[in-house]
Image (cartoon, rainbow, N blue to C red; front, top):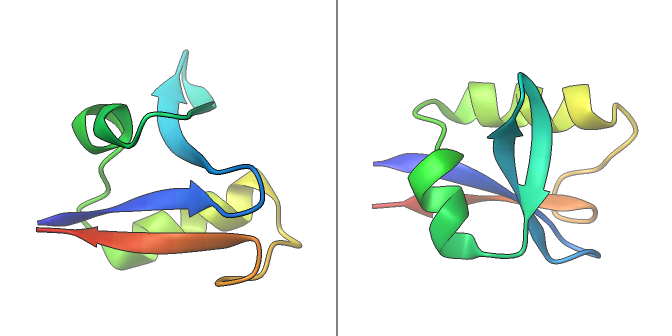
Length: 65
């Protein structure tokens, strides 16, 4: 079980990329490479990406079971 972060307007998901935050359009890649095991870590990553983003407006955190 874990979480992935989806950028709502762009329909992209976070994945790691060269020690930075990358994005992908593929949900399967986000599950394979960008899974957060802690909800707080997923939220922190979204805020690090852009501190002005609002959850459920700019991004959402999806539970992966």
